[in-house]
Image (cartoon, rainbow, N blue to C red; front, side):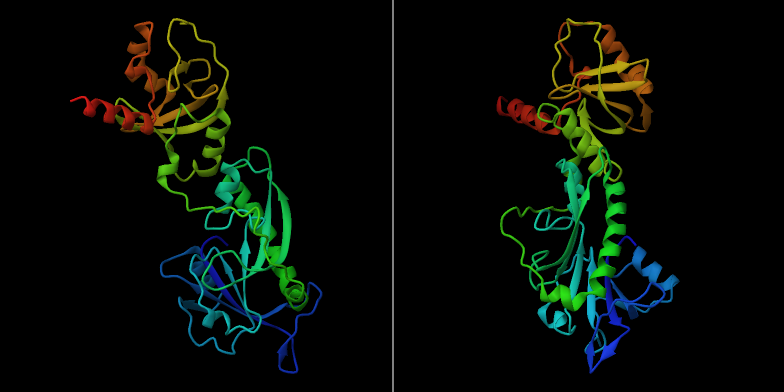
Length: 331
């Protein structure tokens, strides 16, 4: 279930006043009771819990002393105090969608795609207070990243893998805790939150592959953007690398140059090492590549000038800012 999640777990087997985890058949329960803690708001986990008659607590939870054996957090985003962790005999576990220590932080799946990792995985760690994603590893499983997959597709696959890994960890928790291992200091990377500033394309610096990975990482949530004639353009329906032939060889091709491909109804844009294509853009409204060409670019292309005019270029925000600073400095 997507969303912020903190669950409180009581095992179904107790012996001599201690919690004991045993391997049971699929027809028997592993968990005696399960309750959910969520942050404020109508988050999906809260709706799921209510629909399935699971008790729901608001954050921070109270009255948990001696009530539960172990806590589990998934994409929770709140630091847990030591006094809360100590209320659970077996501590609090975290299901994290990466091969820790790589991609600690709130957005590991997005950065896995954005940086072109070919392998990732799921890690079950024991929570430590005061810092995110640094606790000892109890269980870890590798997952090969499918070629050309999106962050949503990878997230769905890792969610399923993580659920199975969590159940396996709960079934063997005392043994897992006895053999836990500290994370290595080498190879640690941080995956900060995704934000809108990441969606600006820098045509003169980014390659076709980098733009492709950026789109697959964040494109479904935050449209890729550029500037045109001083206005923000959102680039929609990315189709990947384009192989084009330009009829007008006199034009000076620079990053940001535009070429409308009539046969495929694609707007091709020149980047650092080639061309990438989009089927639509968002200006004042959504426009197909044909609409944008006919309504805005056609007259510019027909001029057949030996050099690109500003009307025939997408300009990165970085370049536009630098040009603005240069122009104002000469006034």
